[in-house]
Image 1: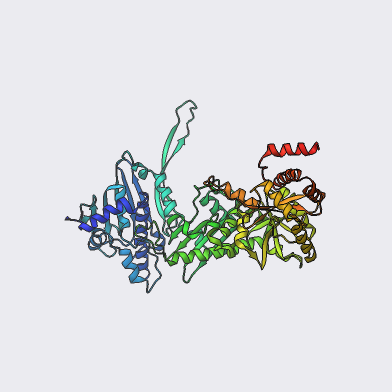
Image 2: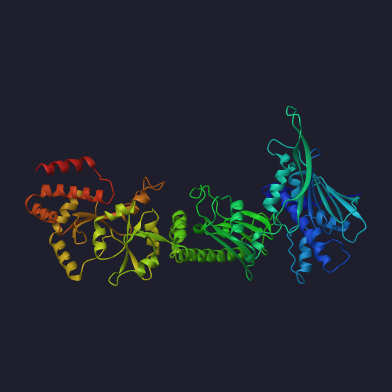
Amino acid sequence: MRTKQFKSESKKLMDMMINSIYTHKEIFLRELISNSSDALDKLYFKSLTDNNVGIKADEFEIEIKIDKQNRILKIIDNGIGMTEEELDKNLGTIAKSGSYNFKNETEKTENVDIIGQFGVGFYSAFMVSDKVIVDSKAYGSDEAFRWQSAGAEGYTVSSSDKQTVGTVVTLHIKENTEDENYDEFLESYRISSLIKKYSDYIRHPIKMEFTTKEPIENEDENAEPQYREITEIRTVNSMIPIWKKAKNELKDEDYNSFYKDKFYDYNDPVRTIHYKTEGQATYSALLYIPKQPPFDYYTKEFEKGLQLYSKGVLIMDKCADLLPDYFSFVKGLVDSEDLSLNISRETLQHDGQLKLIAKTLEKKIKSELEKLLKEDREAYEEFFKAFGIGLKFGIYNDYGLHKDVLKDLILFKSSQDKKYVTLKEYTEKMPESQTAIYYAAGENPEKIDMLPQADAVKDKGYDILYLTENVDEFSLMMLGEYNGKKFMNICDDKLELDSEDEKKALEEENKSFADMFASMKESIGDKINAVRFTNKLKKHPVCLTSEGGISLEMEKTLNSMPGTQNDKVKAQLVLEINANHPVSQKLKELYKEDKETLFKYAKLLYGEACLINGASVPDPVEHSNLVCELMTK
């Protein structure tokens, strides 16, 4: 037996690795199984050119054994094994990777998938073990050797009585502490669940022994029930991932079953996206568009991201960098063969490869949503009801950076048929005389239809988009225009429906009564910016319009946000009076004969306009008293 010490830098690296590099202790099993898989792949590769290997392709396997009583967990493989020198070199020097060297030697002649490339994964075993023993016999060697270590102080290498080619890693699991439960790594169900989680698609079978109890039949009904133990060996992993199968081998039922099982949904997905790409970014992707959002989707607790695999081994359960926020509803996975991983294999190096994959995923998701919109309108509308808000936020966020990606995916209900329309559909149906895309914001379509301005727009034969979500108006503002047509809020003071002659006549009348309007504004106060006549109202006497970029609905939304109590946003409002309504004539008369009553009318009309637009009356008591006073005159 030879006793050796780790180098001082290796001791520091091991301590850092055990306490810092790996965030989850359960990762140790993934690392050790990946090492065993590499050993099997190496021997399989050798068998292609060496007839003396003597092991058939279907005989390569990994076995997991649990000795609960003695607190021992074993990972066994019949792979290529290690010589004494290789044990010393690969396990005695931290960060020395035999897999990495093997890959460099073989990649020029054969495409061999080797998982372990960093040489530190083996030492994750010390997170859960106080002693690790490795017995290994290399292919072509007559001797077997044992590597043994209790941690950073050092290790020994000695002869082993192992008879067969391969490696056995024996972990002496630590005792429980106040903070850690190490017993879980001695439970069959826990180990099998970790295999399913991280190593389900290792290409070789991973076998475990399971013991179950079966009742023994007894003719005496009053006798105590008795059981016999039945032990069986089961293959725990699936081996061949569904996403590596050809599409023509799979049915919708296969995709849906995998989705429900893997992503815990009761409903079938709306759309399945399965494809593989090669070239600058080589990866397989299996993506799903859900029918309904999860319960926490619109909360801070929701985590977006796709499962990320490297050669069938789970690296990250939720890789957020693969999905933009506006496509965060997408579930699924990506399996790449050439990602740059960091030393612990738990996280990614943020390089161009990941960004390239994310960009192609974005294009693919957009394309599939466009196909769904075209091929199954009803299904798309149901999808949009569930996730449309996120698409609209995507247009608004990042200063409109992604508006071109999303503008053809958003829907709004419209006034003509009360059904959803895309912006493209809206513009295609516009009359030649229509110069803008008209919209109105409100609590619901019914209340929007009650707006005084709506009648005039509809009378022109123009459709109105109903904006009923808080984000709607902000997203259209960020879009600015669609197909050369600007968006116009029907409650904007710039709304123009008059002919040139009508506009000129209205301008003259407003100039004539400028002093009256100034007096009315003074009586109302700073709640409004101006008062004027308008032709845009049919039967309604009055309305509120806004100047500038902030509408009344946007004011409500912005002021309802947290942290705005001391910094309120204010829309610049204009009180517009129907020039063709009897009330306008009454105001003209009062301006000449009874200015005090005119001021009361001005306040009353402002209050009525607030009510019509869904805003609260600033002073309900004053408003009520004015109504009663003027009624009794």
